[in-house]
Amino acid sequence: MPRGVVPRQPARTGRQDKVRAGSHAGANRGKSASRARPPKSGGVPGRAKPARAAKAKYNPIAPERVAEILRRLNDLYPDVTCALTHATPWELLVATILSAQSTDVNVNRVTPELFRKYPTVEAFAALAPEQLEPDVRSTGFFRNKSKSVVGAAKKIVAEFGGQVPDDVEKLLTLPGVARKTANVVLGTWFKKAEGVVVDTHVHRISRRLELTKENDPQKIEQDLMKIIPRERWILLSHQIIWHGRKLCIARKPKCAECALENICHAGDKTWSTVEMHKGAKA
Ligand code: SF4
Image 1 (spheres, protein in one colour):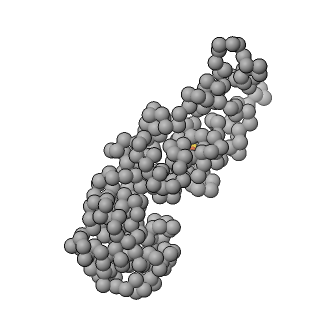
Image 2: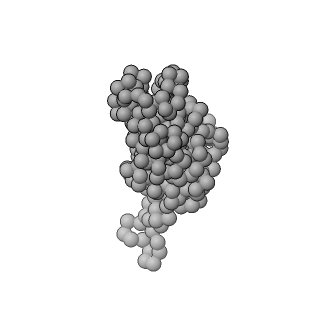
Image 3: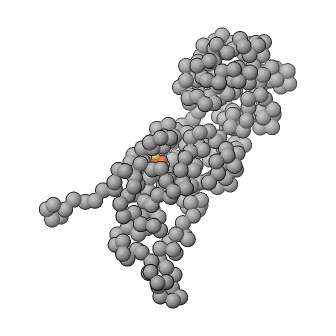
């Protein structure tokens, strides 16, 4: 290499200079900007314009792309599972209710003492919600969470013989339990793939990876269930959640360290070697 010539590296700003419209996963890499641009006056009659043709081919939910995302996530996070500390399905249910708008680390600080103090679902069912409030205060939204946990305990004791049901419809009848919580309990404890857990990480990363354009968790779940093989629903949720904690964080994703970088076109990347798509962001 002649002296003074330094190989060009992608800019760390994420706003790549000379990243060209219509290039997907480096499709136009190596072409000059003028060659990649479509002809100004419509080009040669009967021939497709190169840039437009490339754009029309890009499908973010093409089976090959989805499979590649799953493969890379498998390599990154082969054995991950739920990070909430629990020893029974009831403890997992309580921890998941408490994790709303909080972090697993925060919840794990509270639950060991909580489960020591109230060791069974019957012990929780005997409480008034106000009695539980001081114990769960640090997880946030403690009044609502106390109501949900005590209400769920009462219902499980009264209607399900003290056992957490392993059925999505029954779980959804419990106070404070929506699809996310039901999917966590069913997938993690009962190993039943009834849906995909859509928490804040799955919400953000599915949008960045263009696996969905939706904002509503239920619609995101429906989109994911259509394109992800059922046998991957449980593991995939855990993998994306871990990816969201380690690299694809909300404010400043660590794109330069991410193994998905060259197939990710998120509009809020912090570093990119491929075209970024404005609409694909958290
Ligand atoms: S490249 Fe960046 S935005 Fe895309 S998945 Fe990785 S960390 Fe997230």
